[in-house]
Every structure is written in structure tokens, then in C-alpha cells.
Length: 104
Image (cartoon, rainbow, N blue to C red; front, side, top):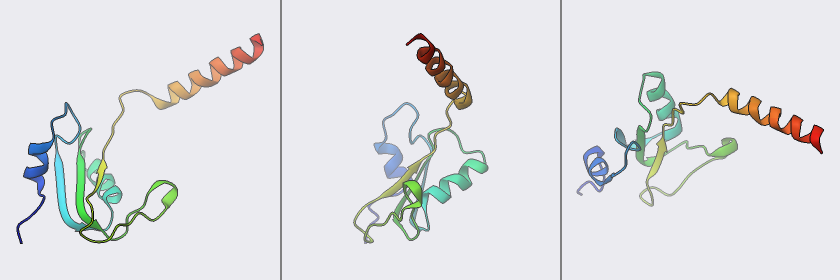
């Protein structure tokens, strides 16, 4: 049976400025989230895409099980490396909230 997807096919079909410029593909993996975390520790760049036809131990938000019957979908995780400092925005939010409360 011919491959439906591979790194080259996905890369050629991706027409974005940064998302999916680097693609890692596996027929089967335990979890694309775990895989992208490993790639991130190895220095993968912002926008790296981990794609699998099947994942055996996928997890979604709040560690909820994320599964689909084999051959029914493509599982993927996109690595994001924001350039802003999240703590700065979090602090700014509370600063504005505090001053807003004192004005009202």
C-alpha cells in the first residue's frame, strides 16, 4: 500500500510563513505531544510540526485521553516558542486590574 503521508508530502502541502516548515512524521508513536517536547529539548525551532498517523497514548488538555481509531485521522502537535515574556503580560494584567478597581 502506498504511503498517504510522509515528511515530504506534508512539507510540500504546507504554505505558511513559519508553521510546519520543519516536519517530523511517524506512522505510529505513543504521543505527538511527548514527541514534540523531546524535539524541543533537542533545540527544535518554533513552528516544528510532529505528525503521526496513529498515536497509542495521546493526551489532550487536562491530560484527557486523546484517541482515534487507527487509520481514521492524522495526529499532530505544533511547537510554539513565543518571543514575549508571559510573566510580563501576566504582571501587566494584574497591574491594570488593580488600578481599574481603584478607579471604580
